[in-house]
Every structure is written in C-alpha cells, then in structure tokens.
Amino acid sequence: ALLSNQTGNGNIAVGSNNLQSITGVHGNTAIGYQTQRDNTSGSNNSTLGYSALINNETGDENVAVGMQALFFSTNSIHNVAVGYQSLYKTSGTSENVAVGYRAGEDRTAGDFNVLLGARADYYNQTGSNNVIIGKEAGHGTAAHNKSGSVLIGYQAGYNETTSNKLYIENSNSSSPLIYGDFSNDFVRINDSLQIGDPSGTGYAIPSLDGTVDQVLATDGSGSVAWTDVVDLQTACPTGFTAVTAQGRSIGCIQNDEEGTASYQNASNACFVNYGGRLPSYEEWYVALNNLALSNETDDSELMSNGGGSGGIPQSWRAGNGSLNTVSAATLGTIGAFRCWIEK
Image 1: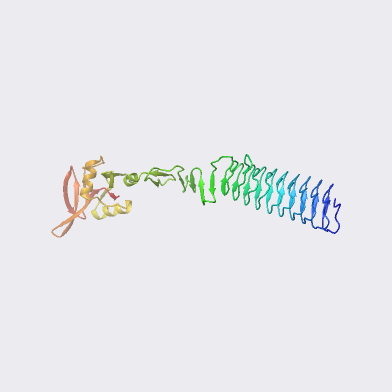
Image 2: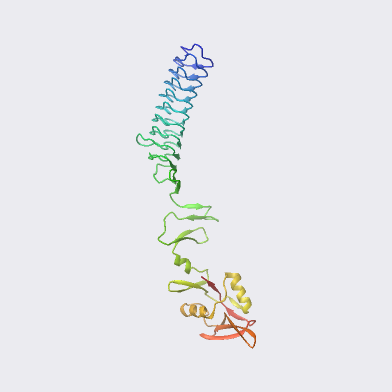
C-alpha cells in the first residue's frame, strides 16, 4: 500500500497493492485488495472493495464501493458507484450515480446519470442525463444508447432504447401505467384516469376514444362517458320526458302533474324546482298528443298562455276530458299543472 508515495498526504490505504502508484496526491482512501492500484495523480477518491477503481490513474473525487465498482475507469471524476461491478466499464465520465448490483455495468461513457437498482440501465453504453430507478429498470436486451429518460419502477422501460422517455410502471410492459415523451412534451395514462375518487365526489375519464361528434358527459355519480350530442339534447331530468321533432328535442314535459296551485304559484314552482316554466298550450298539446303521460285529460291544467277579459288577467287551461278543451280563468284560480323545461 502507498508503495510509491513520496509527497502526498492525507491518504489512507488498507489492503494489498492499494494506492501503490501515487507519488504526490492527496485525500484518497482505499480499503480492500488492489483498490486504486494504478492511481498516479487522482485525488480525493474513496474506495472500498476488491479491485474497486483499480485502473484509475488521474480521476478525482470518485466514490467506489463494492467489488470491481468503477473497475475500468481511468480518468473519471465525481462519480458514485455502490454495488458489485456498478459502472464497471465506465471511463472518462463525470457526475454519475449508480447504486445497486451491476447497476450501469455496460456503460462506457455518458454523464449526469442517476441509476438506482440491481442491473438498472444495464446495457445503456453512452447515454447521459437519465434518471432510472428500480431493479432492471431501463435494462435493455442489447447494447444501446439512450439519454434524457426517466424510468421508475421494477423493470420500467426494460425494452426501451430510445431517448427522452418517461415510464412509471412495475413490470416490463411497453404500455406502462404512465408514459411520456419529453421530446414532444406529452404524457399518457394507459388506462382510466381518475380525478379524485369516483365512489365519492371524483370521476373517471374513459380510456377509449368516442366516435365522431360525441362529447364527454357525466351522470353526476362519478361516471363520465362519450355521448352522442343528440342524446344530450334529448336528455331530461327524472320525472320528465323529451319532446322531439325531426330528431331534435324541443323540451321536456313533466310525466305527471306537479300538483295544484294558482297560476302565479305554479309558475314559481316550475322555476324554483326545475328551472322551467308552465308549458304553452301548443307545447302541452304536442307533448300529450304524441306521448303517453299520466293524467293527460283528467283535469284542466294551467298553461303559460294568458289573456284578459274586461280588464281582468286570465290564464289558459286545457284538458278536462279532451286535449282540445281550452278555457280561461282568473290568475288566482287554483288548477292542476305540470312543468316544461326548455332545451
């Protein structure tokens, strides 16, 4: 240990053939058989393990922990390799961090990578600026070069060899739970995307595309689905039926009578309860003539049509045995009514 050292200080060597070539460098710590054996001018390196950083000659400020970690490096700087043969073939690189059994083992060049996990980024040879976390994440099946990727999870991006990709996954699937492309600035969810908890106040967005001219609509209970526009046009609240003409909804008529009230109170009830109004006689007639509703002609129902006689305001009523029966009464007269909602 320290066989050739002449003027260097602050060096620690424990083990056979450690730091045997240095002459005047400082701050190296070498523990283990032949660690930093060939170091001649590199300073501030810390190594622990059989042959760790064995071939380093001029590299500074590296940390190599584990058998043959940074084994082939001769002039790398500022690297951290922890684990058996981590960054094994790397040389001439800077500021890489590899933690795990054989993490980044096949790498020969490339800077600013963070590799965490056994055999993480194993076959990537020269890529830079990657963040790869997880056992065998970014592993590959043959030598390749990829840069700028973020791969997180067990075997995430295992077969990915191109650059600037995002994978978040817990398998080697090519359709990860979350996929992204930094080059084109997009991110993809490979299944349903939930906003909050759909069983509570959240909702889920469908994973499949709809057809031409469909829109997303919610049922108000956490389910969002592609819906034809015509379905939205004809959709009515519970207790109402759509009245359509030429494939287009003109409004919603209440299936049964809401109750009895004066014209003023009936109008107010339709507005407050449903955001609607009393139907006009024309709307009422078309609806009841084409649909099967309850109590169609049992009573004289209030209409929104009105007029006056002798200066006294009146409202129209219809029904009472026939759709064609129309009469008028003063506004304060109590009558049955059903509501209408505009579409």
